[in-house]
Image: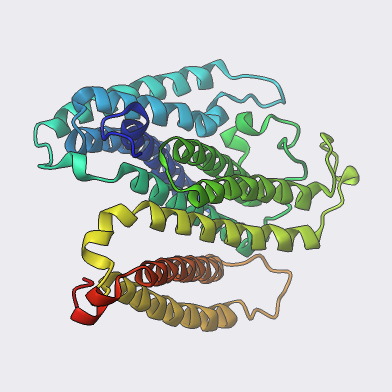
Length: 388
């Protein structure tokens, strides 16, 4: 039996989707603002952080019936997730040290962000959407998880393009610091790429765990629940492989002499990341089935056409980017650091490849569902053309 629309597990999906969505948008924006060689002024990323908090609250007021309270809940969730990033403001220059000024700044940003989210919820509720209850928030949450994973793969591609895979010599710590307290001022050059990748990976791991727990509570299909558990296994394996790629073994040492970097584990890390992304893409598609089956299950199959168009476009883009990557990275001076253009093209090539794999996996899952549905279609209806 399905859960009633207003049951607690079902209604929690809107807050989860918007809270995790705001946190992922903040993390991606902060990464872009922090890219070397020149960082943006400090007010720009902080302003965007507060802006995304307000936007998440506004969406709660606009697209749910929660009003300012919905904005407050979204703000609290996003603020809690932001601690993964804001901890870098509180870290001191030495391991285990804390900066009082940084703690005060992180606390002020957290309070201001929650307040803006609540205000955004109040503002959004003034012009509420006509049918907010019709939104499949579980499906939206699954899409948020897939989008966050895509951003993680793009950041991972930037790490590879910048030759920064071993910029941080230890794991799970960062130069002896707690990973979440490594000071932002020391995140320069390749260290920024590698450490940002770790922090974003932590956010994706939290998103995956929460999505799986939510699906265990609201999803009736056993195979979807099993797929969500597989996603947990994959994200844990992905994080572990990424760390062991640096150290070669489990150790808390911060000395490069104790490390044994592994190219085999680096390759496995990249492969598992692609499989994990494809898994989340499939979860997101079946989670949205209820919302689209009324207009896309039979007939001309417009969603299948969209998948086909997306695959053609992505394939063309991948080929062009592959040629571009070959051209811009064909630098005879192998010891020179990669330029910004080389990094952008190579990262885009890797990211589009990940998107191509995910769309192909989602397309295959959708086609499998259509075949299963048609197998159970009554023959008289098929013959009469009434199967749509």
